[in-house]
Image (cartoon, rainbow, N blue to C red):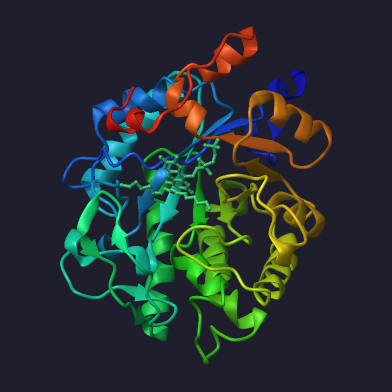
Length: 346
Ligand code: FNR
Ligand code: 8K6
């Protein structure tokens, strides 16, 4: 497994000390003003020996919130709270990106002032907010062009705030059925303006966010997570394939720090992608790729040696083992993950 512990240069400015990323993991533990706490700083700094920590998804503005106590990056208090986190991680020799998030139609006005939920089109998700069973998802409003421009601006502002908060960069959350992903799949995007119908149109808003953030903080500090294979709050269709072909071709021309797949289990096969999400992206994108989804150190090491991806993100095992890196290096047994571990930050 030596390949996992090699350094890896994302670009001229950022070199990781190993190839293992801590995956973004929502923990719903920020305070009621969505400010990160000292417990969160302790939790992240205990994991600073990862090559890179990606923060739990962090909302760019109030109407992006879909779960309780998810942190934000839009108020001065939130920036200060994150400064404590990034300083603790840096002090322990780690690096950390902020994952920038808007949940789109998965948001709920229960969490913010206002009654609108924005998405690509007025197509809702079925069901209820997890752990908040009395809250049913509501039908969203299709974002107007002005809404879209404001969203781009708010993503950029959050990226600037992330840099002010001491993050080494940002990962734009374009995955897992949230706002940007809602523009990329036909299931949720029924628009007939320049943001819908054709692959070129459907990638327009996500790419605008990528380009505007890149212009502001640099491509070397900007990464993107995408879910070409729909699996969460989204139904995939065969027509989605052309959208992601188009997106990957456009991303190939940019110099992002990395591209990260959003998936729970990378053994899932998507007929319309011709196989696993990671194989599909690898075949259509030649730059730094982060694989994820059910990997152990052993299977990740093999996948990297077979050139399936360059870096691996580890999620649940990192929740269960704050000293994941050390245990893997020493060949020690890992504590298995269980859902009741989500109740506490350890
Ligand atoms: C996640 N995942 C996730 N993904 C993301 O992009 N942003 C997030 O905030 C979260 N939050 C989150 C919370 C919890 C409790 C879990 C279990 C997962 C998905 C995560 O990043 C990763 O893709 C999956 O967990 C698969 O990797 P593992 O756990 O099999 O290594
Ligand atoms: C309070 C709720 C915690 C919120 C977590 C937000 C993001 C978590 C992503 C969870 C994904 C669930 C995956 C379902 C996999 C289905 C596979 C077919």
